[in-house]
Length: 363
Image (tube, rainbow, N blue to C red):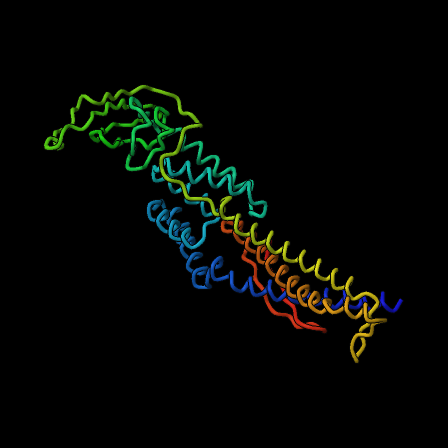
């Protein structure tokens, strides 16, 4: 019975040490992460001021200036509600392609984050902006050449187009559009077309091989392109030209925290194994203020590695817990760069038998 009581006492001591090390590591990680993921008080105040001024300008019809201020605020921190406002201003300033991109991102962000306030209203507003903008864009189809050409570059109004989208109607803002195609060993192609709402413009490209050295400056044959206009209904599956804002979180950004969590779990498991080995090797020996008391020489020899096992168990458990807590915190913070909710905060707390940390915010 005495051995069992001492074994449980040692287990309790390890658990207390584990909890204190985890709390300390968690507090330190939060303090270190706040400069990277949070904003200063000045940034928060200026962002709020920019949004208020942009809202007032939008109500007075100054949508260009409102869009500029809202874009500045988004560089401090983008949220679904701010993205919805930006999409509305892009629609008002006839940036229809950009409005579709912002509105679609807004809907996806709201549906992905269950903590966003007024989620239903934001989804309805962004969906309405996307629908209105889609009805006012035109399309351009670039075709007539081999997409496997070396160093192929296709651009529409300066925006790079993936070769997989060749011969696919691509949405574009009404007005003039410049189509450029270049490939190694061929003369560059350039054509200017006029895009009308709800219509598709087809640009058939005829690339000519480059002549011998000395005639590289020969003017391109204007007959190498055939441009035709054909009315076509708007397709919701069309691809947005303007480069969209990357998502706050991606699969690649989660690889790091997952690896850290796996390493932390493995290290903590090693600590548990060392603790079990320490208990097993201690055998029938008893801990006393004067030292360990064992029943015989064999027990003494078996108990000698117990000290080493105990130290390894303590260090491995503490390191594993810290790494696991770091991985979880990293994963949560990496997933919250576009959240409406406030960032996590931490404060030290004095306890009766030690110290701890108080965590505030929403996960």
